[in-house]
Image 1: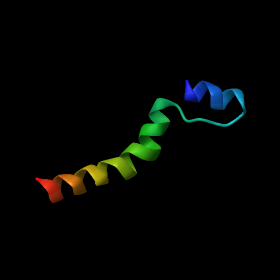
Image 2 (image 1 turned 180 degrees about the vertical axis):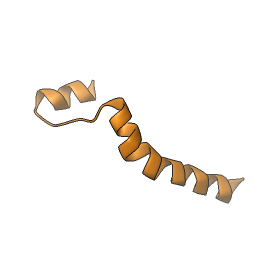
Image 3 (image 1 turned 90 degrees about the vertical axis):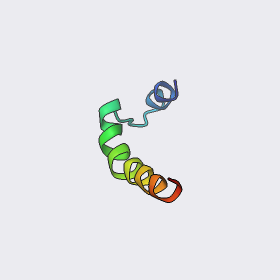
Length: 40
């Protein structure tokens, strides 16, 4: 829903796989590894 509202107002939004490559791999995976090492 947020993607539809943003695209309606002319804001470019990445596709699901674009999101995975741009945010998930470089940011979320290292954070997950760091949290795993700290708490477990």
